[in-house]
Length: 199
Length: 199
DNA sequence: ACTCTAACAGACAGGTCTGTCTAGTGTGAA
DNA sequence: TTCACACTAGACAGACCTGTCTGTTAGAGT
Image (cartoon, rainbow over all chains, first blue to last red; front, side, top):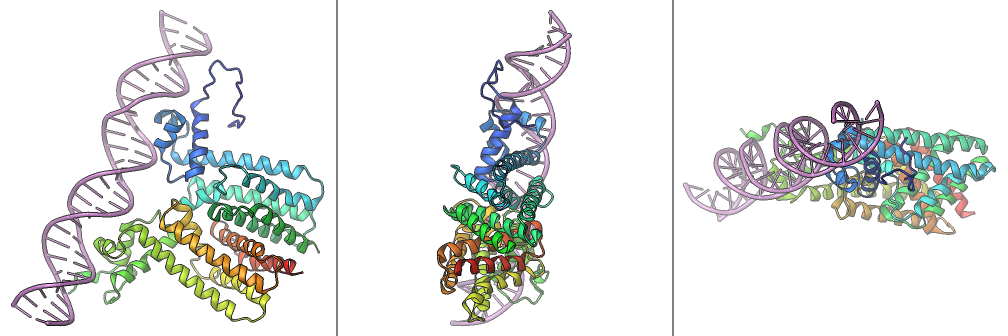
């Protein structure tokens, strides 16, 4: 679903993607850059070059488009983190690989911090944004906890939550303070915490 | 008989406080509990038992009311942190006192995480919310950096930023995940980081 | 040729929000 | 008394937003 491949001329007669794909792309760009509340439906459809009726026939509501946008980002982040983790066998390095993945994202142009915390902060309880954010955070916490356990932490649940604090704090530092050094500093802090929890 | 006897929740019939004070109280309660974007002007004035014209004659705009609300919280948080820090002389304890202050806030009923990051996430660049958030964060980073230096950290600037990551991450864990153990876990993580940075 | 589907353009309804404005009320001071 | 002032109540304008609806067009499958 929602192939993020963006095609590269997959040979179709027209290189115009479907309305669904163009909408998701536009939502991803605009929602992330400016926030889900600031960006209205009209901006989305104009940017996507799509009729309003197409948005509502494919996604049903703005809230569901927000959900699709966050699901897309969840998939991409998950793939990136899993790739970094899988590149190592040493348990300690596998924990820190999560922060390598984060630092890699920080370096990308236009990175503005965690899309989930931003969207959740703008949205009301029960909204798709909050639901998907909770889902994403639960997944990430599970990853950090599992990796902490494999690395021999005395209390992997606690360490997992502490590592998530650093992860979140780094994303916030990027978004609000535009702190350029947040990536490596978060990784160093994670390493210090991990080493203290293994001793 | 004053027709204003039916004051809002914040004010009683014999409420002699000025409209300015009642508005600030209402803003503090509603903006914090539900968000600056969700809560409209009408909710504020109803809760304060105040006419709309009074709001605009005293604060000028909703944005300035948001600023006053954040300035109020900044003052209170600053006082609380300074009180906790001043209660200790040991440099290590003085660093951790910042997290004691945070844990104390976490324990209060109705605590919903950092008001500044929430308000900033909902607001656009250039707004009063973003300005006051940057001001608050710069102050807190300065405190953490100074205390880190006094505690003998090898690189107090770095440690200060790392401690702020933990501080922010704990607030986020409270707000989004309602993580009950965030307070002590953040303090423990800060202690581990501090000890590693002094060695 | 015929039909079915996806998509287009855009008007429109109904709601919410901020901010302005009019008009009236109670109180204290000169 | 008379004036100044701070306040109340609420209508209103203007902007914006989501979501619906009508009508049109183009292409693909049968």
